[in-house]
Length: 291
Image 1 (cartoon, rainbow, N blue to C red):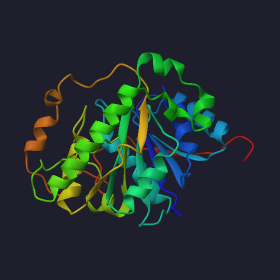
Image 2 (image 1 turned 180 degrees about the vertical axis):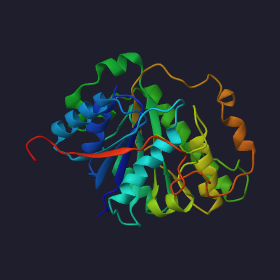
Image 3 (image 1 turned 120 degrees about the vertical axis):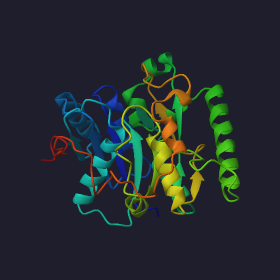
Image 4 (image 1 turned 30 degrees about the horizontal axis):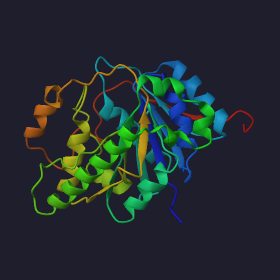
């Protein structure tokens, strides 16, 4: 029997978060806890989290932090883990990261834990829903664990292709024939042991703005000997369509050139040494009727 993982959901907006949380709360392998970290103190997020807790009967931990001048995805993820550590979670726990606009498939937690039984990092996949598919999402479909039925043949083929490519990179990695950060981590859907995350001091908070913080942590995890495993076919999340900040070409991302620089395995600005920020506020959200 798999030990329940601790799920972390990160967001910078209240939009789309309620449905993602319903998907996280209604897994075939329930989470040991659910922590939501927001890169804003928008109180509408609190309302949406309460709504999801009420619909699923699941308590959740919410970490709110006033928005900074620039996007701080790396710090936001670390804020969630800091709150989790402060709650007294066991050091050998497993953690799964999801993005607030990505609804996990019903068996996502289970698939990640199966991969972690033979690997150190589980790499999941994101199915990008079309505008039409996003409009068709039904809450009951998520609560019943049927979100996976939305995949069309082209999306299934894409998942198969990326799984093959990832497994090839995992094999080549044994012989030093891949880039230091490959196979890449999708920060909105991956899992690992808490001890491994702590060992590299979490995400590097000096990465601000869009992109590359996930490639950076992949590089540092691999430097410390972490072995990746592919869950691309079995642990999918469904990305709800919305305008994106992502550049057309990855090489145009503001932080992409930083991956060419040498970096220590342990981030200087990380879990135990955060970049200066407004004080995060942690709240426990309990379902109505259970208080």
